[in-house]
Image (cartoon, rainbow, N blue to C red):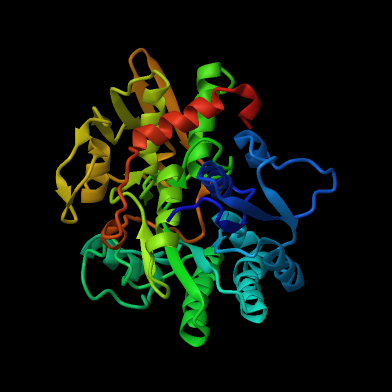
Length: 409
């Protein structure tokens, strides 16, 4: 799509992805409007200020809970495209604030669609769904058996194992109030397409990261702590479940995917966005240490029972029918030959003469964990999408960001 002089309305423009999207669209010549909550002090949101784009955006005060404000935003922007990114997107908060999450993510999405319907405008809408909608995904028969023991009942039951890479047709088993709220919005978008012909396109983006990612998200939790290690401010990394696997993309790849969907996506359809690889939280920590100048020769649990030499060595063998870059320790975790639990207390990373502790914190574990996410992006690739950034690129950008002490938490 040619963005020059296109009117674009972005909900969630002050968020991590929203600010990157705004920067990209301004560079492409679009007229960018952003829905934003009133700030008592009149300050410019951090993400907007860091992108130096506050002068290029026309801000419209409002929020997703206020349908009249959304109607006003549509009058002002007269959008050709609406990118609906606004949400309460922090999964742990959704467990402690489930009603807030539902009001913003579920009812807020309903308000936006109703405002569009009642104003009788006809923009293309790209909805930011989430890979968290898939939730409990099974990578092996053994993992499925463990889940049955843990939960007793699994619905929908898997029809094929493994379920990765995850296709758009994979069962949805959301494991958090946040994920449930996104399933609601996902189905509502398609309901409005079927019922009213609303040009709604659903993106289920897998985890996307980069410089400026919120400090509460795990990749920033990791890189922020590693930057502090380098600065001598802390002496170990503290983390939750290191066994969790995620398909981490660079935010710029995801922004390109959003724009591609706005131009070539088919209304009423769902598209995965991701990298077609999966990486453990443990590897993200180890790769962050190495990027910070601390090559990891060996890891071992605090008691020394579980040890892996050359844990970050490259492995490109096929798994789940796909060839992708991973570390030696990730291969072992995926094969089930090693596993880390709270009983291990933590892991020591041996970096030459230096030993770095990676301590497990029970409070950082989710009440219900999503064990693995890995996207099948074949459908998006058919529209012309190409993933261009590696996990190493993401780690480097985040670590460089936190090298500025003013940006460390």
